[in-house]
Image 1 (tube, one colour):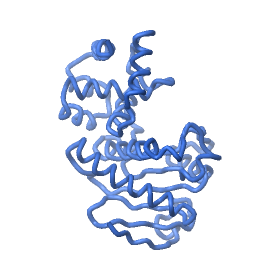
Image 2 (cartoon, one colour):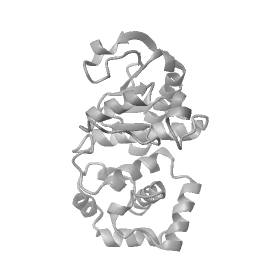
Image 3 (cartoon, helix red, strand yellow):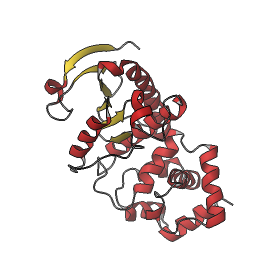
Length: 259
């Protein structure tokens, strides 16, 4: 698939939402939903990320049985300060400073990512040489974009106790719930017991394994159609009502599935 690349001024393209820097835009053919923005210094990274986005869109269609409803933008940031300024604006947190492990985010209309080119000096817990994990990270955020486009809260700022579902779905659908991560969660649950509240699932060092495996359990126990239906709810009461189960029983049944 050939792409058309054109240098533009972002101040003309997206007013105040794109930090006002001169960047490049890559617009794919009409069968895709995204536009990709990056600075020339990250052209190599952008080509790779674009391939992963296209792979991710195909994977998401296969998993959810539908395409993205709306177009969205992907921004590659050439330094952490620029990414922080965007997140400060988006999250209405003027003094926010991201932790070093925070390298990407996704909501209905956009996906932001710190360029892997600088992960070695401006990030931690991520290895740009591990292309398989980086691809999964990109697809993880794409799942958030897809989820946001199907949720009453497109930016997930009006939700009630569904962090575990939002993140667990992205972990599971992106392939991040590999055998090693699942085994670590399983061993911890067997040794120490599982969290007793849904609000505690997306916490601590095993949060990826906990949330991803809980969503996997729902998929296996209730079926893919029911799991897909859950993306339309932003309140825990509606999620549990769809599953026709209580929080306590859901967590107990999930814990038993590890044995």
